[in-house]
Amino acid sequence: MHLETRRLILREYTLDDWPAVNAYTSDPRVVQYMSFGPTTPDQTREHLHGSIAAAAEQPRCRYELAVVLRGEQRLIGTATLDVDRRERRHAYFSYLLHSQYWGQGYATEAMRTLIDFGFTQLHLNRVADTCDTRNRASARVMEKLGMRREGHLRETIWKAGRWYDEYLYAILAHEWVLPIPEAQ
Ligand SMILES: CC(C)(COP(=O)(O)OP(=O)(O)OC[C@H]1O[C@@H](n2cnc3c(N)ncnc32)[C@H](O)[C@@H]1OP(=O)(O)O)[C@@H](O)C(=O)NCCC(=O)NCCS
Image 1 (cartoon, rainbow, N blue to C red):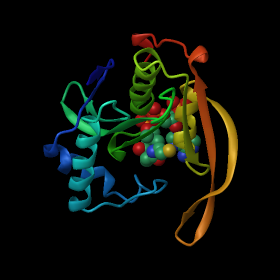
Image 2 (cartoon, rainbow, N blue to C red):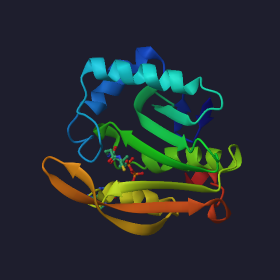
Image 3 (tube, rainbow, N blue to C red):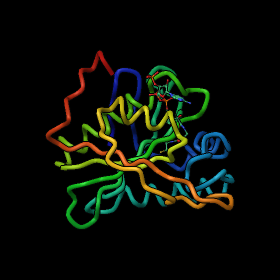
Image 4 (cartoon, rainbow, N blue to C red):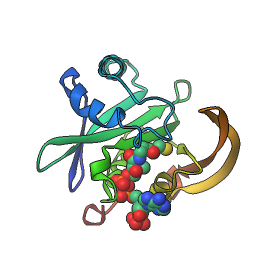
């Protein structure tokens, strides 16, 4: 699978991508609000094996894609859509980027295209995500995508000896506005 935006390519992973992926998944700042990491090289290689195997499953449920800068062909992050296995009508997504590339609209641009793929190609009815309530950047990305905050989930994350809350964001197919390429 291959998706393109104005500045980015979203493509399948290969095992050779592990050093570029580990460069951000091993960074404590990047994984601060994630349920994994910081990773070791072995963990990243194992994860990529799983991601590549999941991409070959039929029907496919996991679309975990490398986010690559078009100009430099540099891998800067991950964008994932996880379709529910039974009905195949709703999905959760997630995203993370190398910290060097934060604050330039890349996450919003990548997710706008991946969500659009979910609604138009996979015929999803609903796309959702949760984020730690402290993760202001992630909440902002979801607001910029036009998602609605549907809930405040109390004490759903146990990390480093204490509980944290999450926000739940979602958008429905009939609410989705097709992206204008120049505005991405
Ligand atoms: C979340 C993440 C992917 C965002 O990537 P990004 O490319 O920087 O996102 P964008 O540039 O598209 O948008 C970020 C928005 O958050 C805002 N923002 C960033 N940090 C913020 C903060 N501390 N408080 C409030 N807003 C913040 C930015 O100003 C921007 O909004 P704006 O366009 O209105 O100015 C990136 O920070 C990341 O990889 N974080 C670590 C992994 C992670 O938390 N993933 C999400 C898990 S739910």
